Image 1 (cartoon, rainbow, N blue to C red):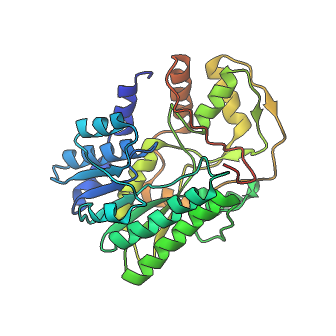
Image 2: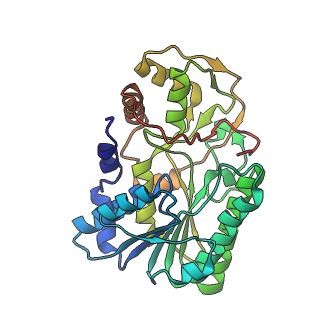
Length: 338
């Protein structure tokens, strides 16, 4: 698989569970922040699942759309688009009233040196959206970075375990959760908070980061010795199926794959597929940024795409010269600097 059209088709292909969930869901869907890494495929997945369920609904994507081609691509696949800056309250007021909102607005990279914008994007925009769509169900993407580094032998924190964000980015994402909790309590808004880490596909994510280092002959840092990963389509599937779990107070879900994967093992398995010899630096730490996804598996089942299948896809893409989004995850960062 080295063709982007084929990749986008795979990432937006609904499962029977997606079709059933979107068939039962009432009303239109708005995706705020649709132009990011995951938003386009999520919007297309919602569109396709709704069509297969024979449900007439609008799927609307709102973003600043700095890249006009992203907007055209969505519209070509039946997703309506609206130009909207989520920090502009007046612009939000112009968006249509919808009963279902996916909140994907956020900033991570570029935080160091521009902390005010990150805090505004992650917190103020969420407050504006929660006020504007207080009568809607809101599925909001958060991050596993709200947790502290935890012992690798412990399996990672569960949703009920204490949070402890490291660094300004992670602190701002916890603040986003708290803002959404506040408005949920004030208005009774039904909210689902999805603590995601790490979504992967062939153009970005932990596996692509590792593949790029391997083919460039760079050593892989194993200090962050383990990571959780989930194929992007599987993550988006869970997000859309979470509308029925949105609640007040908010429903919280660790959205990832399990068990955690040793970074050294992932790199070694990728290297074999890429026919290169891996090199490593650092020593595996006793702690890592991990999440226990037992609740996710119990509610939605195992991800359809296995880690080995994802490794196959990434290796094939890289061998074929497939494009990178050039957005490294910095999964090895232990001090919260992004």
